[in-house]
Length: 396
Image 1 (tube, rainbow, N blue to C red):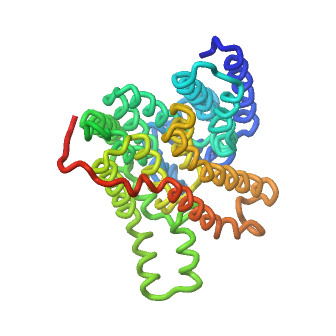
Image 2: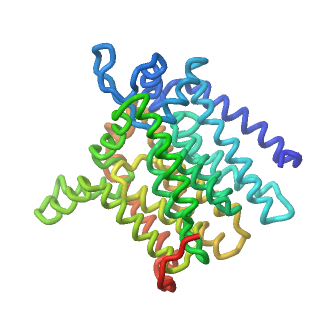
Image 3: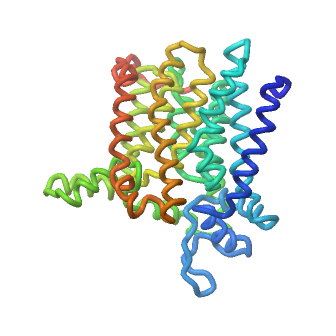
């Protein structure tokens, strides 16, 4: 890949840009909270406790892999952040490789599109490089899983997603989508390898830190609707125009949000399997609906979905059904980039993210997002209308 002069020079320039952004933006946003947790774990204490040296502290919201990455902060506090930012370079190379596999003559325009799809996409720049948020690692693991899934290396695919779940738990849900094959059925290798890696990692962590490693699950379950979640808008309406049935339904969906997500996963999984839909379609639609219905609708979670979109566009033949399917989802990505840019600018201008004069964006930003999602899904309605074919469950 780097033998191509355009790719080589782009890689060098991208490396410089990423380093400058990650290093000179410093310890901001969630990354400052990471350092506080790592200061606890790096002296041998439990990062999931709520009290340290007699002082109340915020418990870690992440899995054990996040804690292990924190040991790099002993070298320099910004080393983990540079690692998070550096994922953009690996994703760039994987996207270039994917594009090379479907076209013979790699042009500058192709390179430009690849850069805009992920490495220099506003959501990536702000989330991964400036804020240094760990969802960039999850996104990297997701695109690696895409590559290994394309190569039919099911054990590795599952293991990679299981590893991602040791950082943030939601990649475990993606296992169901990646395990499907339109022709063969359900890959037990993928499912079992992912679950095994996750369980081994959590078991090992339990013997080191105890039952508190499950605290992030409780933390997520207790949170209120945020930013881009569709439940954020419905909850906002409910606060002002509440009536009994609507109030009951919204509170139920918020309180039982994990149940709602599992229903979404099961529905997409069953439909994808019975209608014999290819795993790429299932993964990108399933991931989108999981994130949209999760009550904590933070934009950084969508890095995993954005990288899936970038992979589908670059790894498919231009003009093919799969390629057009992916391009019809691009308006969702554009809105994500705009929303994260507004979030970032509000912090610079008003010294507080989406507060004061920006509060309306916080309260109602999920509304246009919901309609854009519905519009894009309508344009790809064949995914939902494809008839069921299978009559039995097949494993491979």
